[in-house]
Amino acid sequence: MSFAELGLSPKVIDAVAAAGFSSPTPIQAQAIPHALQRKDVLGLAQTGSGKTAAFVLPMLTLLEKGRARARMPRTLILEPTRELAVQVRDAFETLGKNHRLTVALLIGGVSFDDQASKIDRGADVVIATPGRLLDHFERGKLLLTGVELLVIDEADRMLDMGFIPDIERICKTLPFTRQTLFFSATMPPEIQRITGQFLHNPERVEATPLSSTVASLEQWVVKAPSDAKEKRETLRQLIRSQTNINNAIVFANRKTTVALLEKSLKRHGFNAAALHGDMDQTARLKTLSAFRGGEVTYLIASDVAARGLDIPEVSHVFNYDVPIHAEDYVHRVGRTGRAGREGHAFTLVSRLDAKHHKAIEQLIKKEIAWFGDTPKEEPREAAEERPKRQQQRHAAKPARQPKPERTPKSEKPQRPHRPEPRHLPDAPDTGGFHSGNMPAFLARPVRSA
Ligand SMILES: Nc1ncnc2c1ncn2[C@@H]1O[C@H](COP(=O)(O)OP(=O)(O)OP(=O)(O)O)[C@@H](O)[C@H]1O
Ligand SMILES: [Mg+2]
Image (cartoon, rainbow, N blue to C red):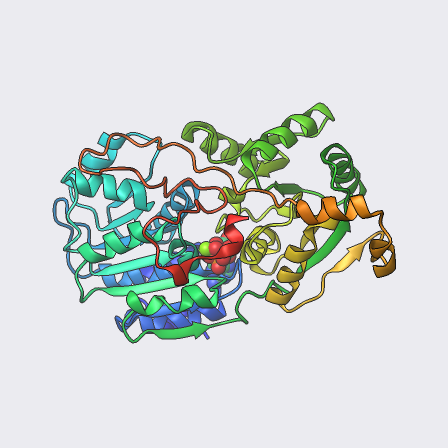
């Protein structure tokens, strides 16, 4: 199968060859023809399998007809994080090098006015995080009635609790007849059920088993103590045991842990930098670009870096904390082993993580081997024989789960017509858990921990 057989325009085929893509990946081969026929698509494929080009390439071909009007973008791509929006803008520019299209990037934490003047001149494509997009809309800088095509990347994340009120608002302002494309590597059943609200007779394309991890990824679980100091020592020993690290991402569940780990690793001589949602945007982008450029070897990150980021050099992912959501595991480890490359992922598992560890193995339908020691199961009798007072204490105080990070205060510019900012959609690190106006069936109880 070649790109030419998919119905893409000659300009697009030329750009694809210049980007070094010799043949389409399975998700591209399956999704592109449907997208070109203006059908809605639900595209599901593993991390690093080329989903970005699966929507960018048909968009470029479709955009060759027609032109942009002031304040009325023709297409819209929504992304859950600012870093990911920047990356997709870059991909759009590389693959769209033969098209003279105006691409506007609307993300929080950076100048509003520059963005507004770009839309004012007419944008063919808007790539946005939902919060900043709504800011422009509410200030009357943007009309969404001309949008012919909507892409929701990381669709399950975008329909999750923290984002859905904004997504619903945005979709209500778009024309009913628009085309909609959804992409993700994961799609929990409770989210899948609501996709029908946004897609009309979609073509479902599942290039690889849903939520599976890639074959070129070597995955391990590592027995870890629950004490934080000892756990950091375990992480250092683990990192030192790996002789083939090029670049690595270390994920932690909370921003405070990210900051602490960064400090501690630096103190022990590791070339580390932190990335989390409480940092200002300039620092976030600077850190990421230093990591991409190889100036930083260890990126210590919250789940703000879990989805979509494409840094081919990442050889290792270390989960200092087991993610609370099994889907987050798939995305975190998917930052390595991309596009057929080798990858290595290690997850520190303490006694308290048994439930989440099991949920991950159930989701990916794979048992993850222990690296080094296999933890011994505590014999049932031993637990029963515990002194009575200790047993009572255990009953009264259940094992503590890590709390999700608190949603940061809004760092957005004023929102004159918005009564109360319910959340900061483009910056939650673990998912901005909000019970706000949510239907009960959408509640994902594990998130609340
Ligand atoms: N047809 C192709 N041939 C070779 N490389 C490709 C092709 N399509 C995409 N790539 C490369 O594969 C890498 C991964 O692509 P991309 O970021 O789109 O993956 P993804 O499926 O969106 O992953 P994730 O689920 O993590 O977001 C990128 O570096 C991209 O340039
Ligand atoms: Mg992607």
